[in-house]
Length: 284
Ligand code: SF4
Image 1 (cartoon, helix red, strand yellow):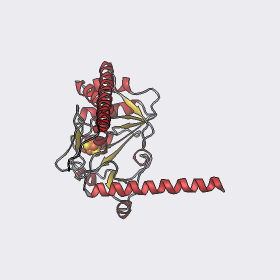
Image 2 (image 1 turned 30 degrees about the vertical axis):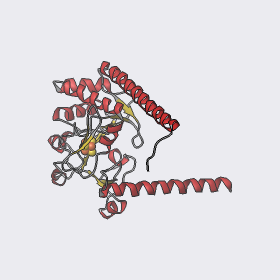
Image 3 (image 1 turned 180 degrees about the vertical axis):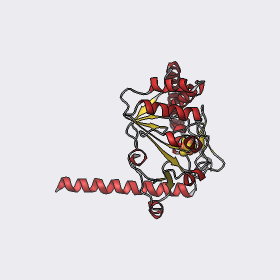
Image 4 (image 1 turned 60 degrees about the horizontal axis):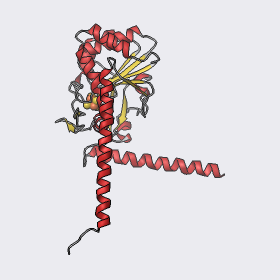
């Protein structure tokens, strides 16, 4: 049977297509303006607070700045945001997923990475970080995305932490060789957690490093005897290793994708239960 659209339907579809194209063009223009402004800055860009972290955060491009990433490795293309998984990837990097759709965040991470890589010496890096760090910073998460990409950069942050003993710095890292090289001179206000899933995980047991491990389900974390962190406090406030539950979009059809959807469904249910409880309390 031959099907033909009415003239009105054809016109409506064309209008929708035009609107979509106009929206995409406007978004591209806004992004180009944002990038042009960013290029004028000679300081690193920190963000403040996100859904999980309370404090200042600096990020670098996920995957691109993670020289020791292994089972978590994923990259968002610098320009297009298209995501590529590393060949040993099991868990898809949450930060790379975020960068794949948030073009401004991606631009900021690259801006930071470019400025840091342009420093030729450690003192240059220290000076760059020092003039960029917000004056009111009290708690700083080094890398919500990215990692220490060379020893000089790792050392620069140690230097900053020594100069600012009143500020708490913390990070998850897979750059264990850089950490091991400085094992005996880590300042007290600099909290490191080895993030399992890197190329040098054997160093964790060898040096008895505090670590974080990602699990699909809470019961697995409990079986491993690890407390579950939900708000990053285990990373800077509490001693000892801990578990994280998988979060973020995972590869379609994977065990991790299933676990993530189970987790989201449980969260939705808990929210509904809380709302119903609040409504019942208000009505009583
Ligand atoms: S090290 Fe962290 S930021 Fe880098 S790819 Fe792995 S999970 Fe992502």
